[in-house]
Length: 455
Image (cartoon, rainbow, N blue to C red; front, side, top):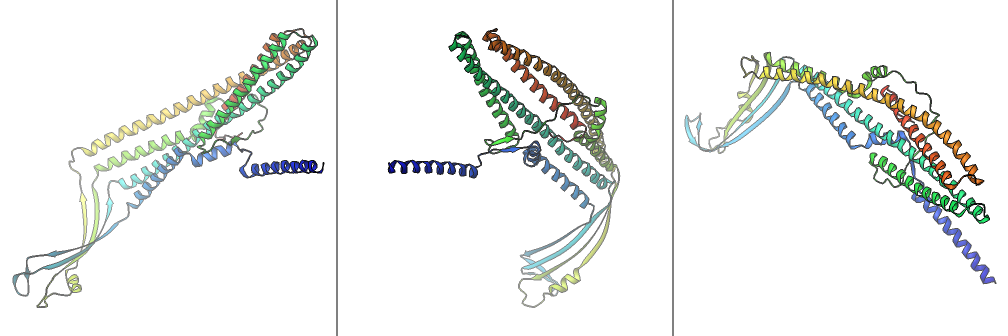
């Protein structure tokens, strides 16, 4: 007896310790998934997305080009030194004859040049590079905006799938209860076996629907995790925000939203900056018609000596460099007369680039207006669908409750019950879809008005 009691106590202690160990492992390995908010998802993408990082590199490159164009206005300064070893005859001044002896020589020079006037090409180049940098920055911002909208759409898809899964589970639980109740009625002789089999079949279908919805949710989570480039999407999940009650659709007119978007959308700014850059390219090309003026200065010296100097006729290096030192100041004026019409061709091509940039700006504006008009129409349609779906849900809910009561007392068969329940479930699904579609479309309209996307 004592031995059995001891074994029972030991078993209890073992189970307790095993449960405690499992809890500890869960804490160590992180049993709960990390839940990401929408802001965290967008911020992570902005910091880690490869496309954005490449845009950042391009921006840094444009910044370096701008810095260099500013430095190009400064004078340059270069120094050089050269030396040689010569073999054969060389003229010896002291002996007034050519002597077959090896000699060495060295020369040192330094010079500096600066452009005084070049048709304002340097000034216009700096301004052009400045606009190129600004355009690159706006392109990067546009990429961030596009990714943010993609993430928002996928985030709302996950919320939709979660609510749809919740409805599927709720319907399945209801069917399981109905199966149990119908089985009791069949056993009591109040219901036919066919009704029980019909309800059981419906419960099996709803169990399959739960599995399908779980799979859909898993794929939606995977899609968002891949948008974020997460290395391990297994434990990825999102937060479920408190979405306020949807309000009536009363946005500004599309033309007013468009006027606001023209001043804030990066694609419009980028196209405008690109046009400014092309206009300065035209000014740079026209600078080829003008003369250029540059000035320069330099200093140099050289020295020569015999490798073998038996008569000690080599002069000291310092004396030679001092005696041969020379300096110069100079100016160069270049007047273009005929260069195979290169300047004219460059100006002509630059004008075409300006015209193309003008069309590109107009195209971006037209595209933006179409997007806003489409977003407005989509939001209005989603809102109307939401209202209709809400009415349908209320109607089907009432119909289902009524049918369920009649089924419970045997006034309707299982087929009518299943039809009413299926219609109610479909109406709930349509309402959820319309709800999240409406939220997404209104968020896009707010985005065009400069309002950050958040839930």
